[in-house]
Image (cartoon, rainbow, N blue to C red; front, side, top):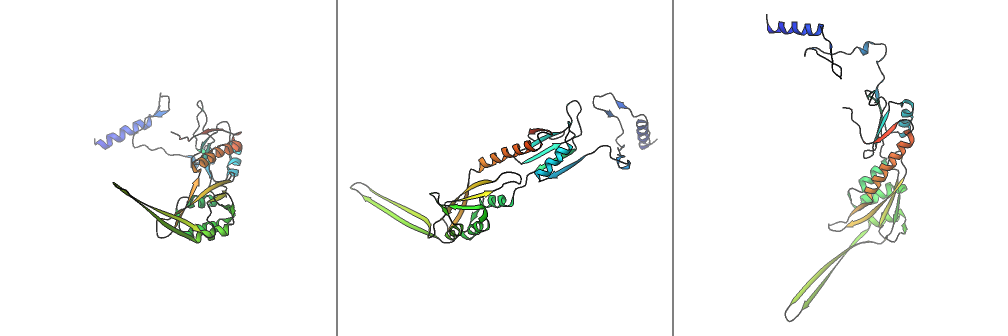
Amino acid sequence: MEAKAIQLIQDTAVLANAKALSTHTPTIALPDTAKVHSLEKFQQTRSRFRGALATNSLKDFSGYVLTHASGESSGFIDSDSMICTVLFNLGDMDTPGHGDFSATLTLKKTAAFIAMERAASVKHSQKDLSDFIEDWAPNLKAITADGTNIDLRRAAGAIRSITIEQARKSEHIVGDMSASRSAMDQIEAKSADGLPAELLFTVIPYEGLQAQTIVLRVAVLTGGDQPILRLRWIGEAQLHEDLAQEFKSVVAHEVGVATDLTIGTFVLA
């Protein structure tokens, strides 16, 4: 008898007499050639409800969670990524669920916040920065070094008309036994209209959170043929921490009564 035929007889015998093994986790011995097929699609209804909602809307997320949360629900907040996931059928240690019915909220950055982040991360020509000021004028205030407000049109005009002044000072000292020489270059950027020292950008960073006022300090780089401008974001790290804490508080306020919330991420093994 050929080896294939012997193997087929053995596999058929295993299938015919397949029994569950006496292990803690249910197991059964089947031949390698056996495949498991689900018959659920042939039923009138599914065996159990499952699915995954993904949304950027805090209002819709909270409404969905409040409707479906039960004693088997658990929520996890990833404050670094501004994501909250609630698993409705996770269960507990005694009766663990499948964890495949969930809702995930990912807060979406606003267009204004994205534009501000980009503006603070790149170098600008005079035209680029003046265009940024004009485009986002409703969100901006310009102030001088002493805290005086400047009209935004004047601030944009001042950036367009920067003058670079350069002065060189040399000093020579001669003695009986020594001689010394020093030189100092002084470069200064000026504008007849008065350059703004800081821009205050008021923005709602993420949909569902409160408005923040971000300080952008204006710096002029004079090393090249043309002046280059940069916006330095003052307190960037602290703002991200504050937004993370606010996200936790908002989610807890919206759905904390319906499900337990844990700071961190959860992966089903």
